[in-house]
Amino acid sequence: MNSQTSPATDRAADVVIVGAGIVGLAHAAHAVANGLSVTIVERDHRAVGASVRNFGHCCITAQSGELYELAQTSRKYWLDFAGQAGFQALECGAVVLARSEAELAVLRELSARREPGQVELLSPAETRARLGGVPSGTDTDDDGGAPAASWPGLVGGAFLRDDLRVDPRTTVAALAGWLARQPGVELHWNTAALGFEEGPDATTVRTARGTFRGKRVFVCVGHDVDYLFPELAEEHRIERCALQMSRAARPAGLEIGPAVLTATSMLRYPAFTEMPAAAALREEVTTTRPGLLDIGANVMFTQRPDGSLILGDSHHYHRTAEPFLDEGITSTLNQEISAVTGTSLDIIERWQGVYASSEVAPLLVREVQAGVTVVSVTSGVGMTLSFGLAHKNISRLS
Image (cartoon, rainbow, N blue to C red; front, top):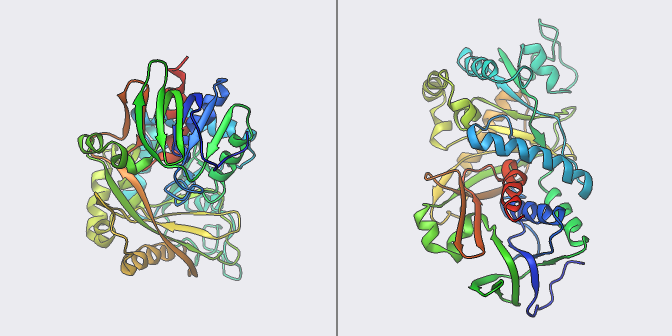
């Protein structure tokens, strides 16, 4: 059925999804694939939260433990649903830059622990080759790679084979549009959920536009769990992680397929931080670039289809996110990216991202009452885990 915004009366569905970000839509997609009828309610007119404010990087390789298994499952279904819904999920991997021996040591250790080819160690020339085109008109360096003025100071790198890249500005909208066209699906925008009432055979979801009934309800509202279930949010100690990000116009001649990660990325993602060499890397960054650690930096970037670069990001944690952007933080991030790339940046957009964060656990999956399950990724990798987590939850219904 077509997406709707008109007031709803009492409706029944196998599954009701509250929240049309990537986690909610992934649950809806898996429900459809299992032949279930689905009603989706979303308080905004379109997705405007964490699902569209990110890098579009599915960071598969850098997860560990349960999250790694979920990420690999998610990868499979990202590719499957991209084919069905008509959006791109590019198997272009990610490149981690190493600009010191301490950085390279972490990559060596991770490569040794993973299956052959998953974390491919690269020479400086091979790293530049993976990064594609570079600004023209400069001399090549001694090792025969790209111009020395671009990607300066490399001592090596690693290619993360399994990572995916999507366009965050268009992917969620494409998935929502496809879902709205599927038989048995209703998508109600501008419809805020207000509460949930248990019934004999279904749960009633009260919204600002009427009521809906579902045999199972999944509440996928990201960091806004506290709006509907404040006690659960307090128990799980959910905070809002605020990020500063920006977008640069396409640098002349620069074509980058993979996501690009740097030293600070290796201090945030678990597969890297679990390596013995990570302690020495943290000490090095603390000594040489303490300002990056002060802002919780993960210096990385991706390139959108129009050639512009998504740049970021910083991390600050609050129960309620501060709305004001600190230009000094953005400058610190973008100066580091300019130093890494050897390229000047023409900034054309700035924004704040917000996602759910918790020190209790990286995931929140809790049945809060019979038939109602709250699902939130509380570790900043919702794009990465969305389809894997949804597959796990929907599979339990059969």
